[in-house]
Image 1: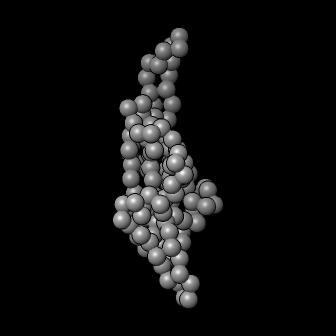
Image 2: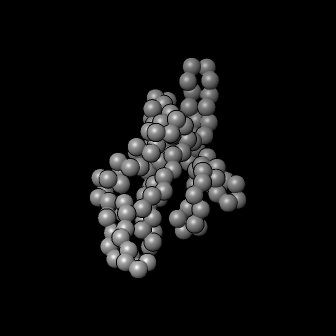
Image 3: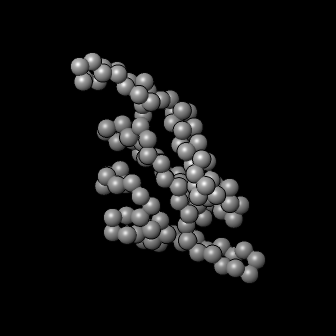
Length: 116
């Protein structure tokens, strides 16, 4: 997402998290009772390394930088405040999780959390 400058669960080509996982030779299938579930769940977040910045005559002079802990707290709180993302986190069927974090040159933070 960061390198291609988009922010969505599907790629610009329409690939879902499950599609992308399968392209990487990863699949997720769960049996719950007599039901078989296939596919991944995904949470995504985009924020910044800073909380705010200060300007003089339209020029940025300083930043109020977030700590790593603050970035983690902001990310998780955002997910927990979203019913769909909260459900992904709290669903006990998921017993595997992968997390990726990238910071771009313009101080954006992208976090992806995948569940199986």
